[in-house]
Amino acid sequence: MRAAADSNTFLLGHTGTIAINPALYKNLSFNASTDLQPVAMFASSALLLVVPAASPVKSVAQLADALKAKNADLSYASSGAGTGGHLTAEMFLHALGARAVHAPYKGTAPALADVAGGQVDFSFSVIPAAMALVKAGKLRALAVTSAKRLALLPDVPTVAESGVSALAGFESTLTYGILAPKGVPQADVAQLGAEILKAASTPEFQSKLGIEGAEPLLGGAAEYARKVQEESRKWSEVVKFSGASV
Image 1: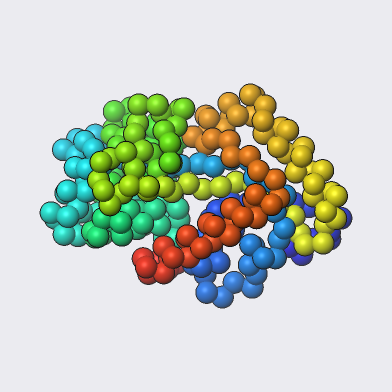
Image 2: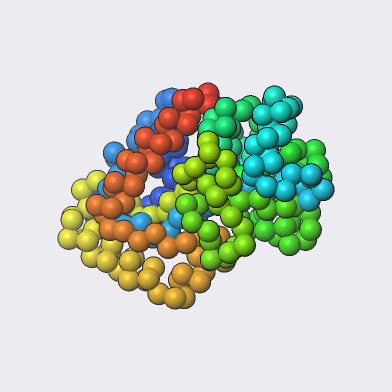
């Protein structure tokens, strides 16, 4: 944001830094959603809901029943307080009217290791790390948090498909895009945005997204600006009702 507006410096933006952090940190000296200008968005990523492979829970509906029956006796792991996994779990619990103990870790690997070991009951995790343990037979995948099933995991249902009425319409995805400092000429923003969308439309780029558990979400500056505002409202509400802090 402090860079010269000379069309040489841009930011790879992510929902966490752009939409979640302004609500999570009370004393930020900047607000990425207002102090930067969107150029283009190109991808979104969902999370994977996992439980230990040895868990008796085999579906989202069974997890929902267990959460309600055990009244905060279950726990969930995240890669840290205020992360997408933490807030997605809080959104999930809020929808169900249930509670669980949050176990924040310093990163995804230790969080998933304890879920796989049965010390923690479930987690909403980034997909590549979780899938490695699913394929190794240490975790069970229950659902993805996207609105539609992912091409990478066609047999894994969405949370919204669980049949639990409280979870109808449930969606939690994180958006990626490019932003520029304020003052970059609109002609330059438009030109770069067009080039980003051209590259992001190629099969080569989209195949790499798929490997990372992400999917194309293409939009120019106006579409990305609307997405930033939409996500800022959504995650501010989650931070507020969850009481999340860092």
